[in-house]
Amino acid sequence: MKYIGLIGGNDWEITQEYFRIINQTVRARLGGLASANCMVYSFNSQEMVNLQTLGAWHTAGLRLAMAAASLEHAGAEILLIVSPAMHREVEIVRAAVRTPILHIAEAAATKLAAEEVTCAALIGNSLAGEEHIYAEAFGRREIQLFHPDQEMRGLITKMKLEASCGQDRSEHGRREFDAFLDSLPKMGVQALLMGCPGIKGVIDRKNLPLPVYDVVRLHALAAVDQALA
Image (tube, rainbow, N blue to C red; front, side, top):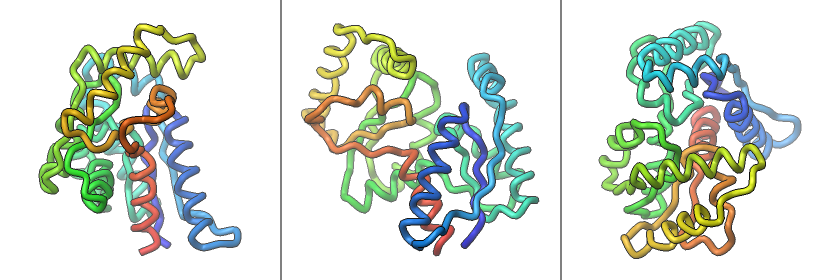
């Protein structure tokens, strides 16, 4: 089994989610008390969020590159950036190591292509750069990726924060988001992509109009596939 190196996300909760999925999947596949060969490099979440808020993405990318080099030196054979948004700086990280980096968009596009999905809507937060993150992998497989407009992204981000804090949601906002979801099949969209774990608290209604794919889960499962190959 290869060693998986996790470069910690914007918060420890998403790192924990990766660690849980990877280890549960390894145990399910190998049986007994099996768990993954896995190492984690974690950051101070507040510092990383501050850098992103200030637009200092390059500086945040350099920190990820340092973490990747440390994990490589420790023996990691597969590297994962445990933050969908930080994949916008993946080239900085790749330049710092020889160890292959499993890109989140590659994992998602591979799954969608295998299930013959040709158009998907990305339901994420309001951070910029999502188009760049997914464009190459989806374009090579001729999968169209639909992005909500900035106003809808803002609403989704607001609803995500309300769900994570246990706050009551605006009924108007809920109706607006539900109407948006219901309109997607008419535009040719065949699937929903959950862009980050917090979106689970937003897409929580019954009878969703489209199948839902969790990009974090797809990313973690792809890591297990490579580790056990």
